[in-house]
Length: 343
Image (cartoon, rainbow, N blue to C red; front, side, top):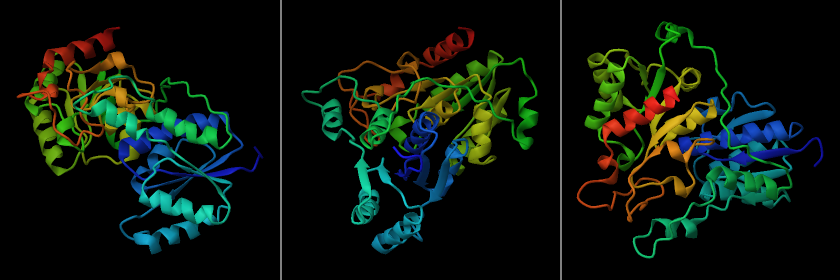
């Protein structure tokens, strides 16, 4: 490839998927330092890419400026100014296909992610389930760049990249001797959320063991829940709505371990090299969405013939009267975290 290669990368949502793209682009940039990347995503996700060299972040505003076919043509006009050599469509939705089509008409090379939809359907169907690990999503992303002619070998290792504590959070990180645990107990889909009463039991146990706990992720409702936990349990701090994404990533990079659902908290921890203990319900690591560089042995889940029945966690569990995620005992989670911290 020529030294002046420029690739436009398209991935607009969801938060965890975009964070996984950032993990892949980190390694791509290291292995292909002469290539310039133009990452197109929602402006809120820009902090995921701030540490990647040779990358320009170009925001898309799908609900305003870039809404509808006219808006998509407008962002095409913005992007064509980069004079790209290729388009890596890591999203494969209507918007990314439309933008790609505009470029294709001008002769720009397009490659698109293979999401493995048939395999995922076979993994999650109730009858004749094909229960086997599928290609990891990060490898599906990497395949797009390989098809464009680039060399890319993913390490599947997390690399600790400790960042400076934000000024307004320094008082929370003064104790250098106590182990620090991040907790990301919420998710976009309710079926991926561990029972909050049981999660409070986990928090109470970890607090009693003397660890410092930092709660991440969510909106106003989740903020109120986290604030209640912080008031009731020693060394427990609510970070929701108090810090921006850049500051959250910096704080996560200073943790010893993260406890997360199958959600963006897991992928944010991967991005800054922090090990994750993850809790799984109707979804499953076999679908390919385990955090980059994370270990399946750190996934807490119940074996059941109906699992998984959902790729994204937007469908309820089919395991019976009680959801499979609620069959997980709080002490199982606490013991796994202790094992990670003392291992």
